[in-house]
Image 1: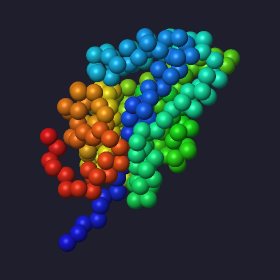
Image 2 (image 1 turned 90 degrees about the vertical axis):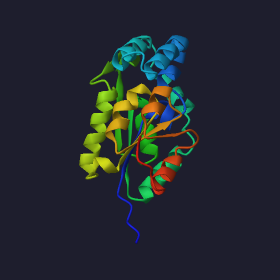
Image 3 (image 1 turned 180 degrees about the vertical axis):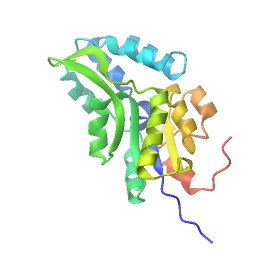
Amino acid sequence: MTHALPRRLVVTDVDSTFIQQEVIELIAEHAGTRDLVAAVTERAMRGELDFAESLRERVATLAGVPASALDAVREAVELSPGAAALVAECHRRGWAFGLVSGGFEEIVGPIAESLGITHVRANRLEIVDGVLTGRTVGTVVDRTVKAQTLRAWAAEEGVDLADTVAVGDGANDLDMLATAGIGVAYRAKPVVRDQADHAIENALTEVLDLLDAPLPQPR
């Protein structure tokens, strides 16, 4: 006897997961601080630094960058292999899909809109007189907030937490991956691969392969 697949909520991180780049590094290119920012990002994603503090440190280097530079950053962003196909298939199945990011709404929002994704949460850059101030606005989307967001979206969609899927690559995603029914590491840092239920390396559509196959017990 066959059983119907459960309706699911799939939530993915954005930078270095749903897209191939770290957006803050692309913006830092315009500030001349890319090498510094990239080094801090790497340490934060490995879990060596507090994310919120590392974000403040990195965003501070962006002060003075014209907001118009964000247009060039949007054009430079490339989706990860299988990202668009994963969203399309989730929509076809009637599943909910969300993007939650320690990156920035100014970049994530248009990506989500282009793919019909309505669940989006990311940080916002403070812009005054057309220039980045080097600060963010509102609550920082850190690992705790990512997990809270997954819970909130699951409740909103009427999806049991057991039927949720979270995908990420860095330490900032660990709470979300632990909260979800299934946590998937994608091209992830060692600390994330070690703690996730599953790890994939090639295309995000491999998430569907995991869900369609009989799943081993999470370790």
